[in-house]
Image 1: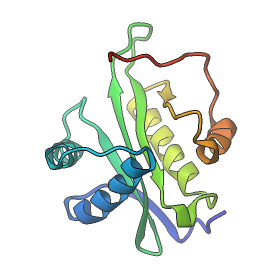
Image 2: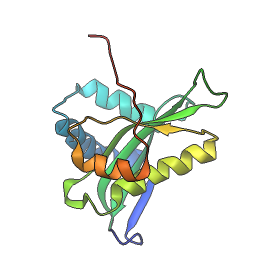
Image 3: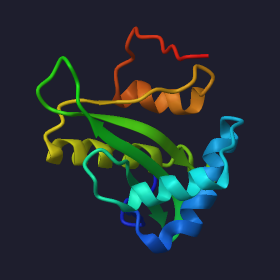
Length: 151
């Protein structure tokens, strides 16, 4: 576990763009994915906006070194009065995995959702992501839902 005094979780700032780009690129590479440059630009611009349904972003700094990120957003839900929170992207640098960075990022999203009055935080991962699933199994509940999408 990381010494929490060395770990800072804070909202992304405009000057975080180079670190965010490196972390998000590594996240996309983990999933064998790429996106065009305009998606990087659009996503970061949305993360810097404060529109109610734009994504929010947090960065993890360990000894002032960027080591993780999380993106989340709120949306309406037909089964609840309140908005719910979807944690879309979570990444911890491989050098810090297992040290508490991922947990701290998720707990920061939980705290943000609580502050926003969102009673639920949910996320998805791929079945092969065993390292992350060990954490998720400790701090979340697996649901029986299976994701489908348009081909």
